[in-house]
Image 1 (cartoon, rainbow, N blue to C red):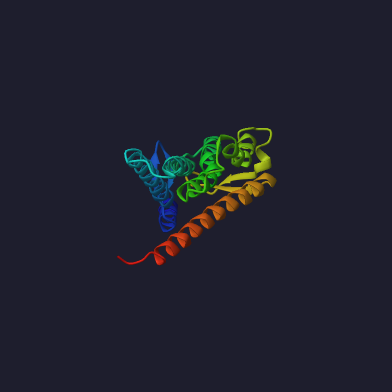
Image 2: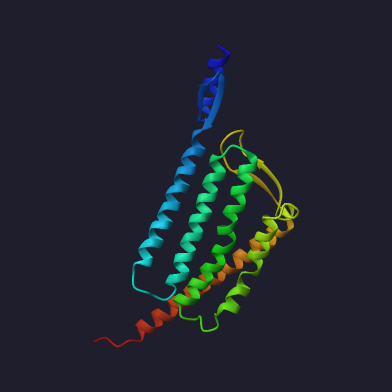
Length: 207
């Protein structure tokens, strides 16, 4: 009777219950669906990057391919965080996920300036400077001694499957601001490019 009530309650909370060797295994179906969507996103990003490699070169194409690959890393890492039950495994995949999270905004900005052909200033040295904050962030994340500077606390959202609930450390805020700056600069470059293109079309005489 008590088992039936527990089973009904878990089903109402969208939790599937299975019995294995006398133990009750709880699988949160909403997190499984969430992880599947993330894996589909990963596959889509990889497929698009492969298709782009096979196309003729265009300005910004290389940066766009790298950005798609990093988005695949981001999405796949998030999916694995959601699917693995052990906290140590979640912590590993969180570090892996951040490789994409921290570098995508910078590569996005590089793509926009290359696409707009405003990259005359961009070389190996100046490009490397753009990655200073992401590089420091990754060193902090992969260091057990400094990990708490980025994530002050970590706890799973549920006992089995699901993402992590994070506490933001001091350097997390620095990395977040850096990401927003590059995202906004990239958007500004594309808006400028669109305005310039519109003015060019508007000033072109009709045949």
